[in-house]
Length: 437
Image (cartoon, rainbow, N blue to C red):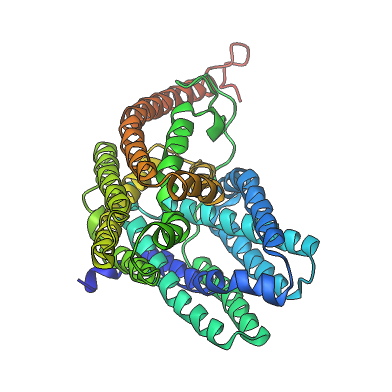
């Protein structure tokens, strides 16, 4: 089992290793950040929340332009530069002493981190055969969870010391991890940049050959729908702690068991689960099956509030966490195949950046939505959330088919345009008798 967790040598192993190292630093940062900014820097909780929201909003706006830049100048160099910028922005947090510098540092960190991740996805797409992208992405995700788990453990040690120097060490670790990740990516083969294409005939979605992701209607719709499915991301960190403490008889400490279950299972089994996704049809099937498991998890969470038995509530909560993590893995596998498979050649950077914005949106709006839906409404809110997961996944199936038709039509028009251009170039000059230039 553990042998299957090691990616094959070459680019897949390098990409997974870079992710492992990078997320190890992020895990330590995530555990320590809130206490550092409020207790050491002296920001109020409102100032901290507002500053982080502004930072992620900036990332939301700039991620697609940065992804487009990765396509045009090369994803490897772009990822390396942005990871170095992320390392410097992390270090800048240790010099922050007021709100405005904190906002500036937050924007720099969020933009460089999200932009670097999009460039890394474009690098993966350029180095890995198309039929292996989902499998390699599963290795990367397993490394992500393993790194976050180890980093969270290191962050827990920092909280035990709870000193300025200990927090500085955690931030230095995160900065160093970004630098090491940049060095690992720099050693991978380069992917040639894709020059901007000249304007051609209108494509199947109404755009031009040089149109951006915003002109790809099915991809935009798919990304929006996927954002609703990604509400499971803030579920365990935001909604469940409040749900357990206010609506069930189970101890809040059970949350640590549920979180550990989630991270360990993904690290161990994401690759194996992803093996069933081979094409867009299987991707749509996994999205639907995963949504049913997420819905079943919501039902289990809803019934955990029934009765006064702490044991029964605990069993239902752990069972729900188990259903949720399997559904999460299936949903992720389908999501990767669809997001990579529907992206046109040479535009992976901007397409992955746009698709990845769903995570940013879910992390920004998810706490507000889930708190209102679940904490205040109670069990009916859980049931509604589960129904939403299923309905959205079924809506994604025809959108994926629509996107495949649009992609195929674009590729057909691209071939015709290239053939037409080559014929025009080879047309004899009617005056000189030679070929026109």
